[in-house]
Picture 1 (cartoon, one colour):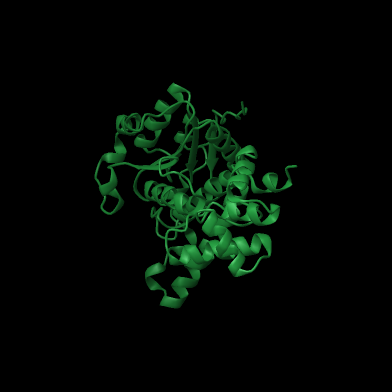
Picture 2 (cartoon, helix red, strand yellow):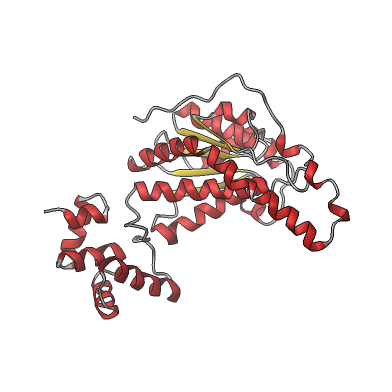
Amino acid sequence: MLQIRSPPKERAVTNTTESRNPRTLNLDELGTEEFLTVMNDEDRRVPAAVAEALPEIALAVDLIAERMRSGGRLIYLGAGTSGRLGVLDAAECPPTFGTDPGEVIGLLAGGEGAMFRAVEGAEDSASLGADDLRGINLTLDDVVVGIAASGGTPYVIGGLDHARGIGAGTVSLTCNRGAPVSDHADVAIEVDNGPEVLTGSTRLKAGTSQKLVLNMLSTATMVRLGKVYGNLMVDVKATNIKLRDRVIRIVRAATDCSADEAKAALDQADNHAKTAIVMILCGVDAPTARERLATADGFVRSAITRQ
């Protein structure tokens, strides 16, 4: 079992997300291009802030991948912008990585309707966070990622406490150092982007940094689970014309075959890129390719090198 570093219990709490930015005190006096230049300069600070949290992000990825290998799920939990970003990342996993819709889940305070319209008061209920996790039958094999820009959202804290109580893995993602939510998770990710351009508007730099971290969590986890070969999305689902064309390009890139060869293999492989790639590189039929992949736990590289 992966050993998780406990978050420190004695830290200076900052409230950067609510602080006024000294570099943007005169926004209302700036010309349009000047304003946009200031905003762009502030946005440049975000990737550097995320880079400082890479050790904690790596711990989270390893925790998530370990639990998902055991049949667990990745569950994002948040309110407002934070919750919507979790829902967005979860929704992208099935088409990108071929996951079942139930493997990566986004829970948003206030339910599905809150995706499009604010539900007042939903984020203030700690019990609602726990209730939403009970509603999906949370298990100890799952990992809950609680996303809260300010780091004090009761909905998220309540959900993390419930998850820890049953033995599920827990990760917190916040944009304030020493945030309360960090003490409620196995792995605490704190990304300090500095004050927002518009005071307290965490849909800006905080939201951007959260999106970057969520990109890392899901993508790196799927790489660890064998959903990627090289830098190719070999488990992508060909659900529309664009994606069907992409699957052909993926097979061709992985095997250096012709378009006709790729199409023929994909026809026999039910449009599954992994299977088609193994068929072509190993010179085997679809059932044998599937058997090789099953033996290799879905990793293409292992499947094609297996004797």
